[in-house]
Image 1: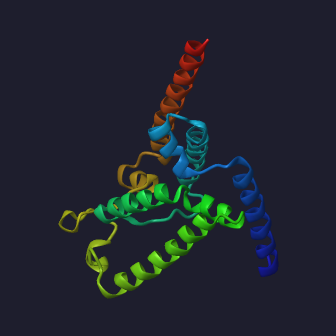
Image 2: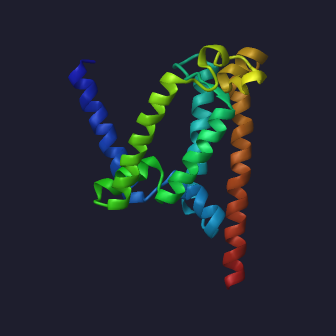
Image 3: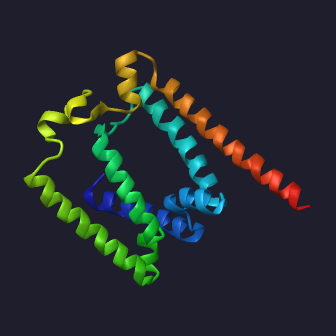
Amino acid sequence: MSVIGEILVAFLFGSIVGLLVQRSRFCNTAALRDAILFKTYRNTEALLLAMMVLTIGFTTFITFGVGQTMKFDVGLNQVIGLFIFGIGMVLAGACTVSTWVKSGEGNVGAIWALLFTFIGMFLFSLLWSFDYWPPAPIAMTGEPNLETLQLGFANAETLQEKTGIPAIFFGLIQFAVLLFIYLKIQAKKTLKTTGDK
């Protein structure tokens, strides 16, 4: 496919996804925030269904050696970073995707959140360039490194390589856990509906 063709496909795909996100009001942050704080599960159910489909899809591809999986080290720095990012997204009232949608709708708060997301990433990139923590060449080798609090690569492909067990097996375990949570939410909603009557 030519470069122009790739741009057109990306534009078409992005437009469809943007329209779906805008119309559905779907938000990853709301999926977790609303379930924990407000006991409402509309976005949570959608997120769980999407995760189930993606889990089976990706682990099937990995099992048959199709596609290229992303490999990155997992460690304490990711846990801290994700926690701080999560707090920021809850305070902003949206995840990064919905922040883009809300900015497009003219929401001034979302525009500020998006602006400072970029400023924060830029400032961190400068800090990362001058002072690695943990030192990337030493710590991020893809192998567990307890001294620098890194767990190495952590994904279904890594598990498949290390254990010889097909990735779909791990995908089915994750699918079962997600399905269990989804069914628990459905049962809770049914119980609430029955109790209201």
